[in-house]
Image (cartoon, rainbow, N blue to C red):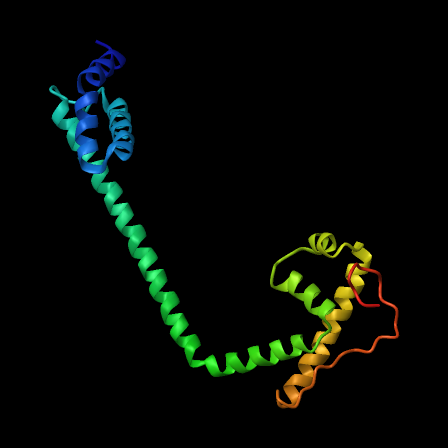
Length: 192
């Protein structure tokens, strides 16, 4: 009998019972995967290691595969739990700096609020909403060149507003509207 014929006989005789055993351990879907892997091992080792009767050996292989799968799943869970713990401890460290973070955020929001609405919209589309400049041109219905100029100017105004907000108390900082006599590139809804 050739190894292929022997494997065929073992497969025909034992497949339903190996599948039933694996399914009883891990459920139908994973049980089918375990059964397939079990017979893959049997195929590789049919000429030397698969004894007569083969069912106990196959069930042992299936059991080992289930244990290995569970060990791998437990390791993944442990790594995920450690990562969650690391993130939580990082959050605790960040909480120590919360006053500085709140102050910085307040200054940034105050500076952003001091800008014209068109600048705020453009900056938030790019920075907060993650749009590319090409996508922002579609939203704002303007050309790429016009958007580039507007973005450059909006960023410069934000830098100046941040500098002003950092040097003064937030209550004292009045919204700094840029009175523009310089013509701006045309974008729909953009003040000239």
